[in-house]
Image (cartoon, rainbow, N blue to C red; front, side):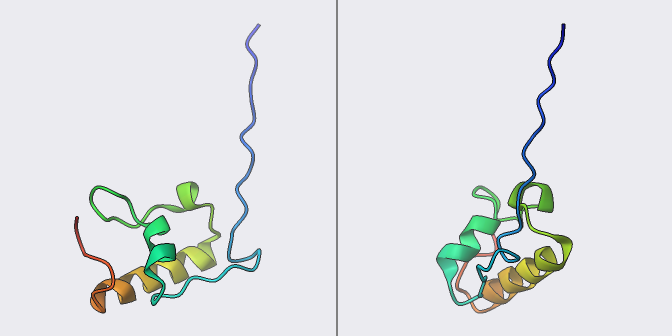
Length: 72
């Protein structure tokens, strides 16, 4: 008999009270991939759609200000 496991739904960290700011490069690096520097999707970050858009804008600001590289 096959057993099915449910994945635990990820909770949006920004809804829980944490913030993402483009000036904090260590937090921004959690939301980009390691090898190519792409922005990670919602299913991986666990962010809601509103905050995923916010994360994308903050990553783009950090790239423009040269706090993080565009590519590795």
